[in-house]
Image (cartoon, rainbow, N blue to C red; front, top):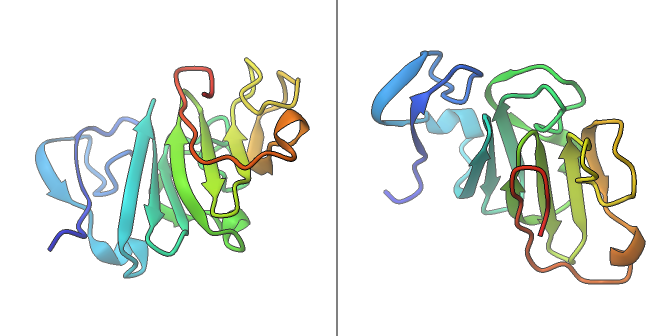
Length: 156
């Protein structure tokens, strides 16, 4: 129907919410795992998966060691879970890097969560990891962010 999310490949850190170790063909993620919400975008990099709904809500699952899922802890997450710390925001874009995630709001603010070993949060610090989303301020405080791209250990 055009609003289904499929996944396949390895699941060593719960990236495939069906509870299997690996799937070699595209397999649908049951829509009820997203509480009936339509998924507009999916981002995945280094074992973390982030799904963005068409209403701007964020779901996360998979590798959570550095807090890259933004759920307030550093545990792996077996199924899509709503990022409650972003519930009051309307997110329009998500991107994942190696152990961290970035989210852009409709009004142009940037939030990051997860690893900060290389300064991925843009605040001049290389620790600690952020287990919940934190707004990037500093030089971006008066700027409207439109898009974000993440790589292994950096943002663009």
